[in-house]
Image (tube, rainbow, N blue to C red; front, side, top):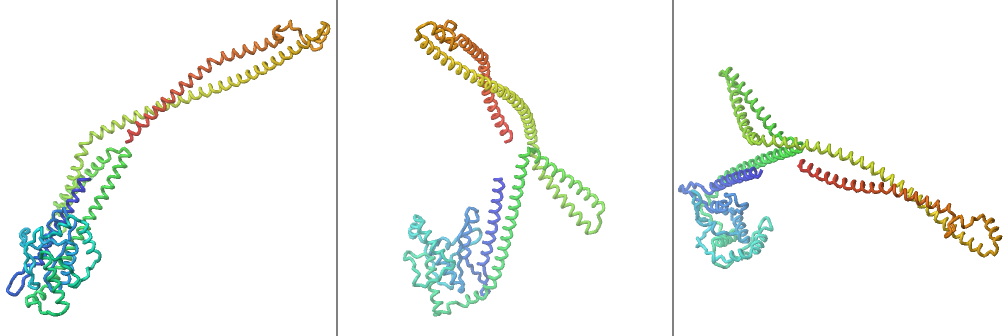
Length: 499
């Protein structure tokens, strides 16, 4: 695309250069007038020299804009000349080298001369004499201010000789021209010297307008042609950009749909259709050659068919040129298709493995839930056992307290008969039947011992289950981490495949 844009820019520059060259030649013709009197050819080279001096760097294609000013020696154009000179002096854009004698190509240009304006030739001014130019080169802001001051209004107002302030330095040709133009302006306004024009100048004034009108018409026609050429170029450029955009979008869609060989197929179809058209045209040409006669219509048909055959041959050659790089890349397309098929197979295998892993994960999850339910049941049984042991311990403590109180009360009795009656009334067994240290009956102690044995048995029975549950939970955690890592690697691989 960069090469195409460069080629388009080069073509555009070349067309602009050709048009500017024709424009300069046309304006060069304006300066060549034949005067009938004495058959003398006068060269109005001031216009020509300035134009070529400004257009010469532009024709290289490096400069982007230029400022063009023209002066004429016609009496009716003195106001326009004064305005251009004022603009040039205000903007500081006077270039004295423009008015020197210069040869450009095969045409010779001489300085500005006129019989109407009596201007004496001035010597060439040195660089030191133009100190203001050096100051403006060092201070670009000053030049910008002067340019802005002179370009505020579209029409520059005319000033009188009192308001115009000419710099009092070494005279330059442009300043002399300005002074002479101001003098002529004052004379023309006061109507003092109406007879400045000689008979020759009057004849030039009478002859010139018709010729100028013709040249203006030519200029207008050339400008129209230039505008039409520009419009055609812009249309072609837009069509090319549209085709490029459509082709890029189509390539994007083809890459998204993995239609790698679609471009090759498209060009091959175009090539086949062109070949078929060529064959049909050749058959038609043979038929027409067999049936040819002196009839003009048949000759026109033959010419048309030949022209069509030539177009088809050109299309076939272009298509073959476009197909050559694609044919070279056919092996690459085949390799890429194989690689894509391999990657799709690997993707299918990975999806099957992922399904197996998911099924294993579901079974492990079910086992984990069942283990958790068993653990909850065992915890509930533990809680019930702990409650029963707490209740037994409380009862044991209460009974032991009661036995101690009863012993204290019985010890206070004096006779054995009273003790026996008291024990019988309380339905209390003697301490010989229980433990001598605590006074708790043997039945309570045996019950507590049985409960302790059952609790120990339950703990011993649940201990391996709890250890197995912990180990299985740890294994499941490790397996989940490994499966997550595998999923991440698979996602990365899929993204690279899609890219």
